[in-house]
Image: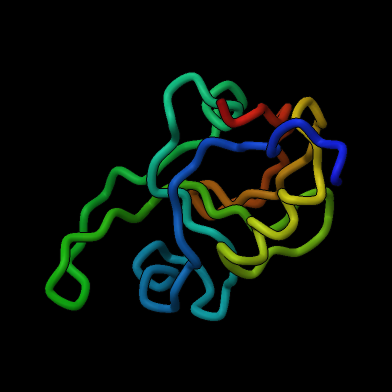
Length: 119
């Protein structure tokens, strides 16, 4: 909102889950979400135990990291990719507690995160 002093912040680097990565991770090829590539040390995502990607594959001639958590929803609002995640996060204030729906090792789990403020 206009009154917010800062942006609610999660502390991940990631991208929209593409079909090829989903397949490589043993997920349904049409699975959508945000593949977490890196988690910033000391960030809200780190505190909540969100996991980044550690497996490296080659994709279109580039080394890409896969295998991390896949975020599929915030407070039961589906996020089908990185833009949707950013849009949803923009509706929250720093300090808000959100529940992320996450696929980890092929299983759907829920992770509570207290959003921080980007400093």
